[in-house]
Image (cartoon, rainbow, N blue to C red; front, side, top):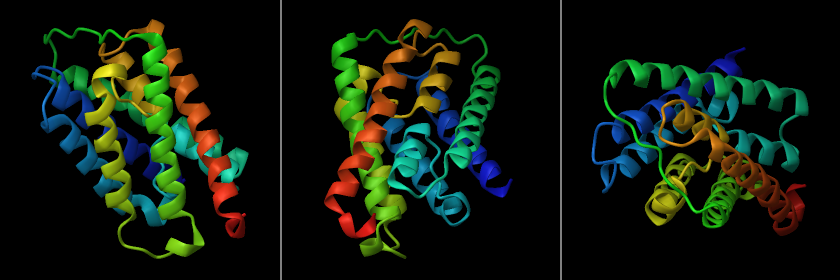
Amino acid sequence: MNKLLTEFIGTFFLVLTIGCTVIGTAGTGVIPPLAIAAVLMVMVYAGGHVSGAHYNPAVTVGVMVRGRCTPADAIGYIIAQCAGAFAAALVVGFFKAGVAVTPVEIDTTKALIAEFLFTFALVYVVLNVATAKGTANNSFYGLAIGSTVMAGAFAVGGISGGAFNPAVALGITLMGLSSLANIWVFLVANVAAGIAAALVFKTVNPQDV
Protein backbone atom coordinates (compact mmCIF):
# COMPACT_ATOMS: atom_id res chain seq x y z
CA MET A 1 0.00 0.00 0.00
CA ASN A 2 2.89 2.41 0.73
CA LYS A 3 4.20 1.89 -2.78
CA LEU A 4 0.80 2.54 -4.36
CA LEU A 5 0.24 5.67 -2.29
CA THR A 6 3.66 6.94 -3.30
CA GLU A 7 2.86 6.35 -6.97
CA PHE A 8 -0.46 8.14 -6.54
CA ILE A 9 1.14 11.17 -4.87
CA GLY A 10 3.97 11.52 -7.36
CA THR A 11 1.71 11.23 -10.39
CA PHE A 12 -0.82 13.59 -8.81
CA PHE A 13 1.71 16.39 -8.40
CA LEU A 14 3.17 15.81 -11.84
CA VAL A 15 -0.21 16.13 -13.57
CA LEU A 16 -1.30 18.96 -11.26
CA THR A 17 1.79 20.95 -12.20
CA ILE A 18 1.17 20.36 -15.89
CA GLY A 19 -2.40 21.62 -15.68
CA CYS A 20 -1.64 24.62 -13.50
CA THR A 21 1.29 25.83 -15.59
CA VAL A 22 -0.42 25.39 -18.96
CA ILE A 23 -4.11 26.21 -18.50
CA GLY A 24 -4.85 29.91 -18.26
CA THR A 25 -1.32 30.89 -19.20
CA ALA A 26 0.42 31.30 -22.50
CA GLY A 27 1.29 27.63 -22.21
CA THR A 28 4.57 28.20 -23.99
CA GLY A 29 8.07 29.33 -23.13
CA VAL A 30 10.34 27.98 -20.45
CA ILE A 31 8.09 27.98 -17.38
CA PRO A 32 5.94 24.84 -17.95
CA PRO A 33 8.83 22.51 -18.93
CA LEU A 34 10.99 23.78 -16.07
CA ALA A 35 8.20 23.44 -13.50
CA ILE A 36 7.20 19.98 -14.75
CA ALA A 37 10.80 18.75 -14.75
CA ALA A 38 11.36 20.18 -11.28
CA VAL A 39 8.31 18.57 -9.72
CA LEU A 40 9.12 15.24 -11.34
CA MET A 41 12.69 15.44 -10.07
CA VAL A 42 11.72 16.18 -6.47
CA MET A 43 8.97 13.56 -6.45
CA VAL A 44 11.44 10.97 -7.79
CA TYR A 45 13.81 11.81 -4.96
CA ALA A 46 10.93 11.75 -2.47
CA GLY A 47 9.50 8.40 -3.53
CA GLY A 48 12.36 6.54 -5.12
CA HIS A 49 13.25 4.62 -1.96
CA VAL A 50 9.62 3.55 -1.47
CA SER A 51 8.18 2.57 -4.84
CA GLY A 52 10.94 3.25 -7.34
CA ALA A 53 9.10 6.46 -8.28
CA HIS A 54 7.76 5.43 -11.67
CA TYR A 55 4.80 7.86 -11.85
CA ASN A 56 4.32 6.66 -15.41
CA PRO A 57 2.73 3.46 -16.77
CA ALA A 58 5.30 3.37 -19.58
CA VAL A 59 8.11 3.33 -17.00
CA THR A 60 6.30 0.63 -15.04
CA VAL A 61 5.96 -1.49 -18.18
CA GLY A 62 9.63 -0.96 -18.94
CA VAL A 63 10.68 -1.92 -15.42
CA MET A 64 8.45 -5.01 -15.63
CA VAL A 65 9.96 -6.10 -18.96
CA ARG A 66 13.41 -5.41 -17.51
CA GLY A 67 12.54 -7.86 -14.72
CA ARG A 68 12.37 -5.58 -11.69
CA CYS A 69 8.58 -5.51 -11.29
CA THR A 70 6.03 -8.34 -11.30
CA PRO A 71 2.95 -8.14 -13.54
CA ALA A 72 0.74 -8.00 -10.44
CA ASP A 73 2.70 -5.09 -9.00
CA ALA A 74 2.70 -3.37 -12.38
CA ILE A 75 -1.09 -3.47 -12.55
CA GLY A 76 -1.34 -1.93 -9.08
CA TYR A 77 1.16 0.78 -9.99
CA ILE A 78 -0.69 1.68 -13.18
CA ILE A 79 -4.03 1.91 -11.39
CA ALA A 80 -2.48 4.17 -8.72
CA GLN A 81 -0.84 6.35 -11.38
CA CYS A 82 -4.07 6.77 -13.34
CA ALA A 83 -5.96 7.52 -10.13
CA GLY A 84 -3.41 10.21 -9.31
CA ALA A 85 -3.81 11.73 -12.76
CA PHE A 86 -7.61 11.66 -12.44
CA ALA A 87 -7.51 13.35 -9.03
CA ALA A 88 -5.09 15.99 -10.31
CA ALA A 89 -7.36 16.76 -13.26
CA LEU A 90 -10.25 17.33 -10.84
CA VAL A 91 -8.17 19.74 -8.75
CA VAL A 92 -6.98 21.61 -11.84
CA GLY A 93 -10.60 21.87 -12.97
CA PHE A 94 -11.43 23.45 -9.61
CA PHE A 95 -8.47 25.85 -9.70
CA LYS A 96 -9.05 26.83 -13.33
CA ALA A 97 -12.85 26.85 -13.39
CA GLY A 98 -14.14 29.12 -16.15
CA VAL A 99 -10.84 29.28 -18.00
CA ALA A 100 -11.16 28.40 -21.67
CA VAL A 101 -9.14 25.37 -22.73
CA THR A 102 -8.35 24.53 -26.35
CA PRO A 103 -7.17 20.99 -27.18
CA VAL A 104 -3.80 20.83 -28.90
CA GLU A 105 -3.94 19.90 -32.58
CA ILE A 106 -1.49 17.21 -33.60
CA ASP A 107 -0.30 15.46 -36.72
CA THR A 108 -0.87 11.80 -35.84
CA THR A 109 2.23 10.40 -37.51
CA LYS A 110 4.57 13.05 -36.15
CA ALA A 111 3.04 12.80 -32.68
CA LEU A 112 3.42 9.01 -32.62
CA ILE A 113 7.09 9.28 -33.54
CA ALA A 114 7.77 12.14 -31.12
CA GLU A 115 6.06 10.39 -28.22
CA PHE A 116 7.83 7.12 -28.97
CA LEU A 117 11.28 8.70 -29.17
CA PHE A 118 11.18 10.72 -25.99
CA THR A 119 9.29 8.10 -23.98
CA PHE A 120 12.01 5.68 -25.08
CA ALA A 121 14.62 8.17 -23.90
CA LEU A 122 12.84 8.61 -20.58
CA VAL A 123 12.43 4.90 -19.83
CA TYR A 124 15.96 4.14 -21.04
CA VAL A 125 17.34 6.78 -18.67
CA VAL A 126 15.23 5.50 -15.77
CA LEU A 127 16.41 1.94 -16.28
CA ASN A 128 20.05 2.99 -16.50
CA VAL A 129 20.18 5.43 -13.60
CA ALA A 130 17.71 3.76 -11.23
CA THR A 131 17.97 0.00 -11.87
CA ALA A 132 21.43 -0.75 -13.25
CA LYS A 133 24.15 -2.27 -11.08
CA GLY A 134 26.71 0.20 -12.42
CA THR A 135 24.77 3.22 -11.14
CA ALA A 136 23.49 1.73 -7.89
CA ASN A 137 23.13 4.17 -4.97
CA ASN A 138 23.84 7.21 -7.14
CA SER A 139 22.56 10.66 -6.18
CA PHE A 140 21.80 12.00 -9.65
CA TYR A 141 18.94 9.74 -10.75
CA GLY A 142 16.17 12.26 -10.01
CA LEU A 143 17.95 15.06 -11.85
CA ALA A 144 18.61 12.81 -14.84
CA ILE A 145 14.98 11.70 -15.06
CA GLY A 146 13.55 15.20 -14.68
CA SER A 147 16.02 16.60 -17.21
CA THR A 148 14.97 14.01 -19.79
CA VAL A 149 11.34 15.10 -19.50
CA MET A 150 12.35 18.76 -19.73
CA ALA A 151 14.40 18.11 -22.86
CA GLY A 152 11.51 16.23 -24.44
CA ALA A 153 9.04 19.00 -23.58
CA PHE A 154 11.25 21.61 -25.20
CA ALA A 155 12.07 19.45 -28.21
CA VAL A 156 8.70 18.00 -29.21
CA GLY A 157 6.10 19.52 -26.88
CA GLY A 158 4.80 21.56 -29.78
CA ILE A 159 4.49 18.45 -31.93
CA SER A 160 2.78 15.94 -29.65
CA GLY A 161 1.92 17.82 -26.48
CA GLY A 162 4.86 16.20 -24.72
CA ALA A 163 3.13 13.63 -22.51
CA PHE A 164 5.65 10.74 -22.61
CA ASN A 165 3.36 9.11 -20.06
CA PRO A 166 -0.06 7.42 -20.43
CA ALA A 167 -1.18 8.75 -17.03
CA VAL A 168 -0.29 12.27 -18.13
CA ALA A 169 -2.18 11.60 -21.37
CA LEU A 170 -5.23 10.68 -19.30
CA GLY A 171 -4.84 13.82 -17.22
CA ILE A 172 -4.47 16.25 -20.11
CA THR A 173 -7.42 14.60 -21.85
CA LEU A 174 -9.63 15.05 -18.79
CA MET A 175 -8.48 18.67 -18.52
CA GLY A 176 -9.34 19.33 -22.18
CA LEU A 177 -5.76 19.96 -23.23
CA SER A 178 -5.90 16.99 -25.58
CA SER A 179 -8.76 15.47 -27.52
CA LEU A 180 -10.15 12.11 -26.42
CA ALA A 181 -9.80 10.98 -30.03
CA ASN A 182 -6.02 11.36 -29.72
CA ILE A 183 -5.45 9.46 -26.47
CA TRP A 184 -4.63 6.25 -28.35
CA VAL A 185 -1.60 8.00 -29.87
CA PHE A 186 -0.05 8.43 -26.44
CA LEU A 187 -1.04 4.99 -25.18
CA VAL A 188 0.40 3.17 -28.19
CA ALA A 189 3.57 5.22 -28.54
CA ASN A 190 4.36 5.39 -24.83
CA VAL A 191 3.81 1.71 -24.03
CA ALA A 192 5.67 0.57 -27.15
CA ALA A 193 8.57 2.84 -26.21
CA GLY A 194 8.66 1.47 -22.67
CA ILE A 195 8.91 -2.08 -23.98
CA ALA A 196 11.54 -1.12 -26.57
CA ALA A 197 13.65 0.71 -23.99
CA ALA A 198 13.63 -2.31 -21.69
CA LEU A 199 14.68 -4.63 -24.50
CA VAL A 200 17.51 -2.31 -25.50
CA PHE A 201 18.60 -1.98 -21.87
CA LYS A 202 18.78 -5.76 -21.53
CA THR A 203 20.84 -5.95 -24.72
CA VAL A 204 23.25 -3.20 -23.68
CA ASN A 205 23.50 -4.38 -20.08
CA PRO A 206 23.55 -8.20 -20.24
CA GLN A 207 25.22 -8.36 -16.83
CA ASP A 208 22.10 -6.82 -15.28
CA VAL A 209 19.66 -9.36 -16.73
